[in-house]
Image (cartoon, rainbow, N blue to C red):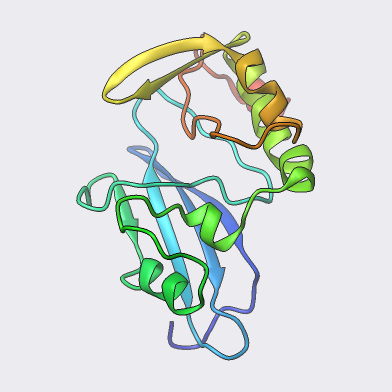
Amino acid sequence: NEYGYPSEGETFSIADTKEAWIMDLVGKGPDNKGIVWVARRIPDGYICAHANQARITRFPQNDPENCLFAPDVISFAREKGWYSGTDEDFSFRDAYNKLDFGAARGCDARAWSAFNILCDGRFTYEENGREVTKPASDWLDYAMGYDLEGEMPLFVKPSRKITMKNVAD
């Protein structure tokens, strides 16, 4: 915030031996010094994948153990005219790095592919406080950019213990 951030956006994986996080951030542009960002803790037993496209959409705003964000992440989007809804419905990706055909096809398709391989074709994720398992193919049209409605899960449970070779592959 003090010196500015000259990028149109980045996603970082941040991890230590106890926890892992995904962080999406965007510079405020040449006329506004600073950044807006959101970070989500990846739940134990789950994985996350990202590739050159913001993945965090809606996020819990009252759970600092699992979600942190810039204090002006929503107000700055409103100020720029990129968002006008309620705080609860705010989506970082939709305001700052809207998914289009090229982003889905070039970026989310790679995240989908990693999930598909590491989850043996079935995505297990949390939805409304309960664990759900669905075929990976449910998100194939989304990942390929054909149907951008909805969103792919941010975190999924792998079907087995992930090895260093799995990550490298």
